[in-house]
Image (cartoon, rainbow over all chains, first blue to last red; front, side):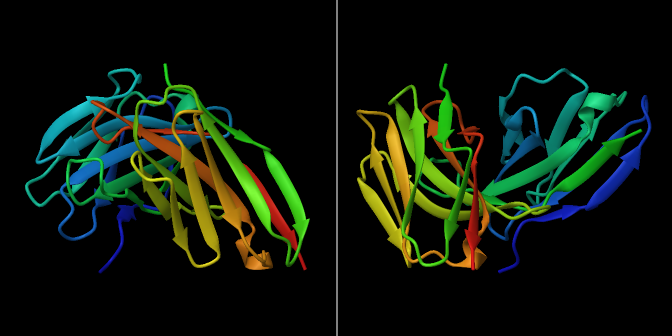
Length: 114
Length: 113
């Protein structure tokens, strides 16, 4: 099976722009979660989607949003980009919405804000 | 509020040594604990998942233990190799929070040939 695929791998944007990141989960996985990784804050949870519904959301401003499609693929959107949004954005998928399944991560999208 | 701590932040050992990485969490009401490995510039690779009802899990040279009552987990790596060099992260999944994992800051491991 193919792993979690995130596109693009690298992005460079300027302040004020918006960006959309994509995540394709492992085939058959219905849950997709997003995380932000920075050197100072480490890994922080953004949100989780299961069967096209947001199940949980972390402590991030409303500029961060996401959605999930019927094929379980997910997108994350960040509007009005700030310098502090520079980070590695990671997507994780798991087979079910229950806690007995491990989460599998993609290689991430490295977002740099100039 | 659940907090996860990993000690030490960095570790350097000669090849062949057995080593232990530590992870502690403040709230014992966890669903499970997962250990990951992260190579520079890469995503996370899942190593082991321990359910809250389990005491340990093994995969090859890796053994992870869980003591929920004391809020601790250890990852034991036997006969370390230079290819084991990476950052190791532990994360807990807590009840009623969906798929939200709470991560420690990681231990950066360097295995010298």
